[in-house]
Length: 147
Image (cartoon, rainbow, N blue to C red; front, side, top):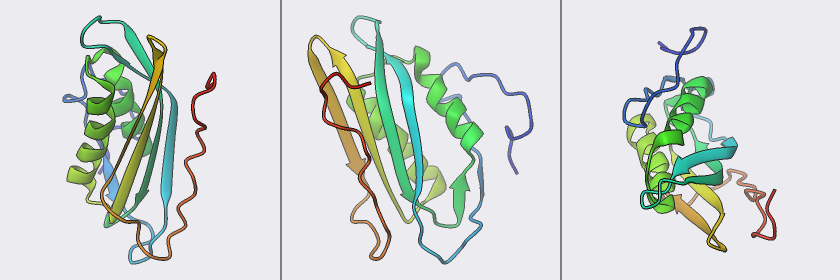
């Protein structure tokens, strides 16, 4: 059962208030990769309160469920007014998805735009990808005026 799909849903005020919906995996017993890309992710610097921007890429191999995309968009959008370091945002997103969805495998890349002249890229995954699953490069180049 989903709470968001087909319903009017407001942006949650915080990531903790966001509810992620999960639906049954339509291809149980078959390993395949799902990729979500959020090129306009925003959060706030916990020190200055200024906005931080990132290109987030989430890859996962589903277990019994898949995350419903509208609820994921609302969850990611809830970081807009959330103050946290890049590392906390990136890894926290992955940890929450793993804890609730229990995928076979998950990796997340947070490609953060520079502040103070230094871009920060954060990567986390649950372990080695399953054998036989095609895991393409995340496609985000090293920073050279990322756009």
